[in-house]
Image (cartoon, rainbow, N blue to C red; front, side):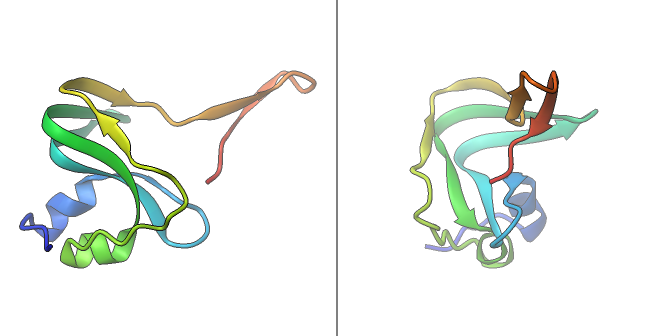
Amino acid sequence: MKNLETKEQRKNRVIAQGEVNGHSHIVVGEATITKKDGKTIIDVTGPSAIKHLMEQPFVEEGLEVWTKEHADIPLQIGTYEYVPQREFNPYLQSYKRVVD
């Protein structure tokens, strides 16, 4: 089923991009995503999830092409802040961004 939002609205639903094969983590359902001052806020008002989808078909046409790499993450009604995952190296005493 095709998503009726505009291309720009669908692009805004991408909260994290994969580094290798064109997939992304995308919020679908009854949610509003606000990106401001380096923060991503997800306001969920109804059934929603974060899905691991191919980005181009979703943004261009609203098609949900699942990569089968991760299960959906259901979101309960509420407000969330997306925080990128980091990994701590105790030997170097440093953090690095986790790549997907």
